[in-house]
Structure formats: structure tokens, C-alpha cells
Image (cartoon, rainbow, N blue to C red):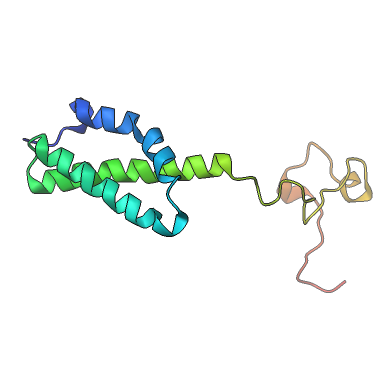
Length: 123
């Protein structure tokens, strides 16, 4: 059977189920998650072979599902983990509007017209 992911219902169902798979994998201790991902990949490969795909196409089918699984896992991790900088002030504070640093900038000027000191030359 030729690989046609756009019209493959099983592929769509697999993609739709990825958030649940990610949820289950996150319950696995972190030191064993690589094993859980490998088991998922093997399962997706077996599914593609059972659907009648030839070995090469089955590998590609499983790889596509795993790529989407990894993206889903990263997105879920990003949403659930607090930002490292959530409660920290910016390392480089922005100047206040109307401060001496911003007073010399005319809103009609383009960036190349703004007179800024060259940081690489001595004053």
C-alpha cells in the first residue's frame, strides 16, 4: 500500500491521540522516558505494518507520528513548566519613556537616522 498521509484515517486518529500518549508518557519517571518513547515508536511501526504498509513506508509513517509526538510533548512541557524568568526582573531594563535615553529619539526618525553612540569607540 502506498503512503498517503493526507487520506490516511489511521494516521489522523494517531495524531489526534497524541495528547493522551504524551499525558501517559509524562507519568513515566524521567529516567525511563526514552524507553517509553521507543515503545511508542515500535507500537506505531507495528500499527503501520498491520495497516498493510510496506516496511519502508511503515517506517516513514511511524517516524511522522513520532515527530508529531515529540512536538506535542515539547508543547505540553512548555505549557506546564513555569518560566525560568517568571518572577525575575529583566536583566536589561528598558529606559522609561521621556528619560534622557529616549528623549533624543524623534518618532519620525528611522533607526539609521537616530544618533546613537558607537559602543566600539572610546568617548
